[in-house]
Structures are given as structure tokens and as C-alpha cells.
Image: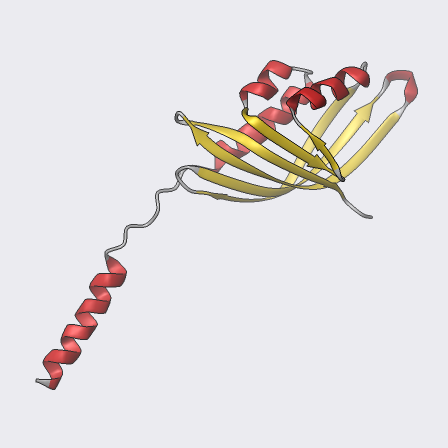
Length: 147
């Protein structure tokens, strides 16, 4: 009888722990594509693309400042003419079926015409939500990297 009780307990544990389905996950590259697409929008001053890749309540926290797409667009216009090229690295991505997050390093080379050049490095993180089957960025945090 003792062996049957042990067998029953072991079987119950196996069934209870093995019957929970794994949460569905999506392709991490989809999250990365939304993120890099947003920055390509900045590079090309394509505010429509930036807006299309973000949720309506998108927020950006950068070094203590709080931005949304409208204030980011105003900042782009205020600093024109300029060019910028972004380079990313050290991606760490987590994604399930409805949400995702990424941490990474971002390097930017700005050229402000006769006003000069500036290079900046950030440590960044972003969160994403799936809406109607499409990934959208809903939050971006950027902190200037210390030397």
C-alpha cells in the first residue's frame, strides 16, 4: 500500500507540473524590427513611420525628460537641418505572445551642418505590446552612457 501512495504522489506531481502549457512566444526579431524602424524614422525625419510603430500612449523618458511622439517631432524640427545614424548592440530581448521588452546599447552620430558633429551613447530599454496582431512600442527609456 505504501508503494501505491508514493506512486500516486509522484504521478500527481508529474501531471500537475507537466500539464501546464508553456506561454506562447513570438519572434524576438519582430520586436527588434519595430525598435530599429522607429530610429530609422528619426534618421529620415519620418514622423508618420514613428507614429505607426508606437501605441497612442507612447512615452519616452530620456535623462529626466518626459517625451511623447508630438514633443519628439517638435525636437526633430527644432534641430533641423541635421543627419543622424544609429548603431545598436548588446540586445537582450524577451517576448511572449502579447508583450515584449528589450535592453540594448545605442550609439548615434549626429551632423548639424556648420554647427558641427556630436556622438552620443545611451543605455536604453523599451517595452512593446501587440495590438491587432501588430507589435507597437509603448515605452522607451534612454540614459546617456557614462564614459
